[in-house]
Structures are given as C-alpha cells and as structure tokens.
Length: 111
Length: 114
Image (cartoon, each protein chain N blue to C red):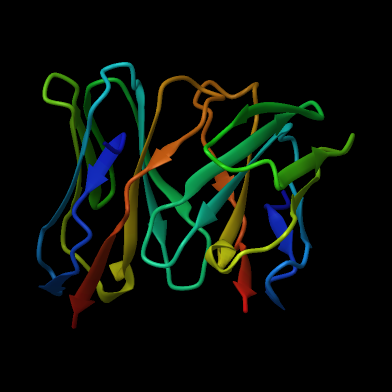
C-alpha cells in the first residue's frame, strides 16, 4: 500500500471553475502536508504548505487538511488557463525526513 | 538568491553504462535530496545528504550512490544502468534552519536509457 494516494485524473474544467484536488494517506504520523505544481518538463514548485490539521488560504488557492480522516485537499477558485499543470500532494512526518508524493493530478483549464 | 540548478538537463545512455548527475543547492540550504520521477508518476525518494553524510535512503539498490560536497552541492551516480532507470531525476534542497523543511526543486535531469 502506498503512503499517499492521489486520483491521477486527468481533470478538465472551463475557465473560472472551482477545482478540487484530493489525496488520502494511511499513517497518522504524517504532520506536514504540501501541494506542488509541476508544469510540463519542469521541476515541481511549492504551492501550499500546511502543518497539522486546518485550512490555509493564499489568493485563489486553499489547502485543507483533515487528520481525522487522513484526507488532504487543494481548492482552486476562479481557475485560469495558466493553472493547467500537474498537481502533486506531498507528505512528510518531520522536517528533514523524506517526502512521499502522490502520483499527481493532471489539470487542464479550458479558456 | 540562486535557485537549485541541475546538470545535464538531458542525456541518453545505453544499458550497463554509468551516469553522474550534478546539483547545486539553493543559497543557504545545507540539505540535498534526490528523487526519481518516472513518466506519469510522482517523485520517489532516492536519498538525502546532510553535511556530506547520507541521511536517509529510499527503496533503491546500491548502484544508486551519491555525494555531497563542502559547498553543499551534490552528485547522484547510477551504475550498471537499466532500461527502468529512464526517468526525470530531481534534486531538491532544504535548510535544517527552516521550521518547515520545504523542498525546493531544480528543473531535473532527464535520463533516457536505451
């Protein structure tokens, strides 16, 4: 069983839609939760970072962590064509430890 | 502030050969991690280097080895290349002085093994 599971999609939405991306994980020891965005043929870039449970908002992006159900989400409001990319969830137990990544969800926002 | 840089960006090797990939960490970062990303998959942890010592290793065979230098740059070496080693190899740097341990990735080295 993988440490973190992510629906690979692909996901295709019209411009302006609200996008919901999700991951589940298996081990309650994970404390740090991140979302990375990866454009084609590029390295992943950190989008959102959350420690423990709760919500975090940054502009059009909201990251949500529910440790009781081991479920993490990323919401994108007013999606733009420039949001078209692969979104990777990542989890780790402690700072300095290895990160476990989901398989990534491919998102296309259609103008 | 200089980001993470990797070289080469692309390379083609044949089975059985050896390859060395290089990484310069972001300014101020003392920890380097290497990840393998196969096509359509998320990155998989290979190993991490901290203060020139290996500080954690994923499920990769010993033919994957690495080094970290005093300036915190790093190398990934892969011996006896196999077809399944074809992937994007990502270097990520981080700082033990940061509370969050966020990883900052380079653009990757795309290896094709024929």
